[in-house]
Image 1 (cartoon, rainbow, N blue to C red):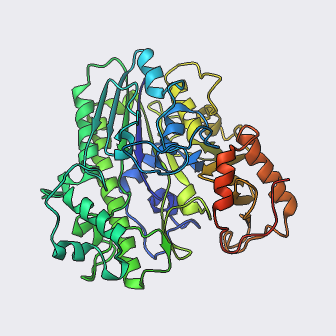
Image 2 (image 1 turned 120 degrees about the vertical axis):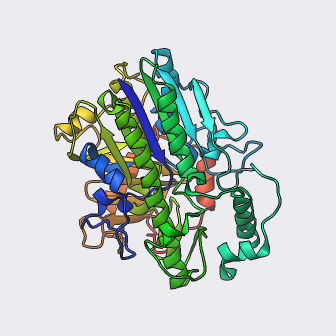
Length: 473
């Protein structure tokens, strides 16, 4: 059986139609985002309603997904490698001693392919293409140094970067991003289209493979949210100032700019869906839906004005960033149209891929296969999930959402059974639950947090509204 894994970067779960039809997680900006192709996939798939990353952000997530191994608490993860910025704890290569899915499947006789524009995976010192018979890196996303000049005009910069948001770092960011977009003339030249068209071509070119494993990595809908104007106008038909960057700050955008930001993001989600549809239909006409497991997920979402913040972060953590979609379409039909509220993480998805391939899941993996149990409506092997992001940890179970620093300070506890779950920090009134959940976080870290990460936590400011109590004994 063939296996295809499609990963979109920064795709909010609540911006996919099958996740937001009247559900509480509907995006808060007053419109439904159009995703007809992902919705069609959902109708043929098992849809996971409680799926989460294991570690964040971009590279730690993919390391967990590609290996099935825990990355939190970032042991030996204090990377500061030449050719890259210090992205976050764990922002480094896959350890040489850890096998990747591609390597295991390649050894089992699978033809393996990777089509990606996630440029962080291909920077100096990175090795995320290990085990792929073919890996294709499509250049130019964000600050990928794919073009050295000429610089865009002041008029063009002003068109995309609002004057009230400008600072030297943002100006440099938008300048490099615009340079990378030169010669873009039609929709097919945009990154998500290029990735999914190239992936569809890979399917056509590798029809002779006895069985294959293809990973498709689209950096879109990650910022900057450049999208053809007609997609943006589906959500905001005005002619005001454009805005496509994420300030990683609170309360700095006017309402018109925030609306335009949300419209550009929504338009890019719809564009990703449109070109996923091209890939999906290519699988259909090639007959691959009859012998291929198709899996779609994302690494994380993105806050766009939620609780006043634009960006993504691990503290305070929030569902629009931490909730991720997972669709699994099995060619024989089990799970089609079903939903599961089983707790799963990306490490479990890696283990499940190995099981789909008929391989034994190594004991060293931290993930466990879950598909059959989820189809049967069972609860699964997890009663909670732990998600690490830098010196912060989030623990989620049936009722509670705990977020604090890894030294047990700066505690935020939310009651998921409340009418507005993230409206009130209830840590002080539920100290026993704080202690229990934090102990689970330490246990999931293997019983200890590295000293350098504890030192990092001690230097980090507490989040507004956090409790003074310390969860750590």
